[in-house]
Image (cartoon, rainbow, N blue to C red; front, side, top):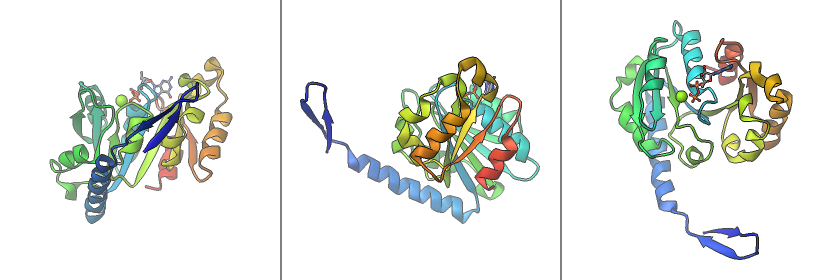
Length: 222
Ligand SMILES: Nc1nc2c(ncn2[C@@H]2O[C@H](COP(=O)(O)OP(=O)(O)O)[C@@H](O)[C@H]2O)c(=O)[nH]1
Ligand SMILES: [Mg+2]
C-alpha cells in the first residue's frame, strides 16, 4: 500500500500490484541464471528518448566487436529503426516491439533469448524503452543497468529521477559536446549521480564520435 499526500493534505491510498512485480522478479532471476549458465554478460541500457542509448550501444559494439561476440535486444514501441542501426555495426540484433508498453520486462527478454543460440554470445546489450520511470520497476535479469543521460535534457534529469540511478552501476553523461550550448555543468551532473549513489561510476561521452567509450567499457568491466 502506498500513501500519497496531495497538496491540501488529503491522503490517497493506492494498492500496488506486488504480485505482478514478484512474478517479473522471478523471471528476471531465471534470465540471470540463463546468462550465467552460458557465460554471457548482460547489460540493460536505460535512458530517455533521444539521450543516446542506441548511439552508445553502437559505439560499444564498434569498440568490442573483435573481442566479444555481441547480441543486442532493442525495445521500441513500433519501429525497427534502432535494431537496423545497431545491426550495421556488426551485432546480431533482436527487436521487441512493446506497442504501448513503456518498458521491457523479464518475460519479453526471455522470449528473445529463446530465439538466440546463447552459446554464440559473450555479451548481450539490451536497449530498454526510452523512459526513466517505468523500466525501474521491471528488472530484466541483466548483470548491470546503465543510465544514459544527455546534456540536452537539461540540468535536472538526474536529481529528478533518483530511483533509476540507485539501481545503476554506471551513469553515462552523454552529448558532452552540447553542454556549453545547453548551459549544463557536467561536473554537477556527476555530483548529482554520486549524491544518489556514492558507488556509481560516472563516465562522460560523445556517443556520436565515440569519445569516452573506452572509459565506459572499462567502467563496465567487460
Ligand atoms: N551532438 C551529439 N549528438 C548525439 C550524441 N549521442 C547521440 N546523439 C544524437 O542524438 C540523437 C538520438 O540518439 P539515439 O542514440 O537515437 O538516442 P536513443 O533514443 O536514446 O536511442 C541522434 O540523432 C544521435 O546522433 C552526442 O554525444 N552528441
Ligand atoms: Mg534508441
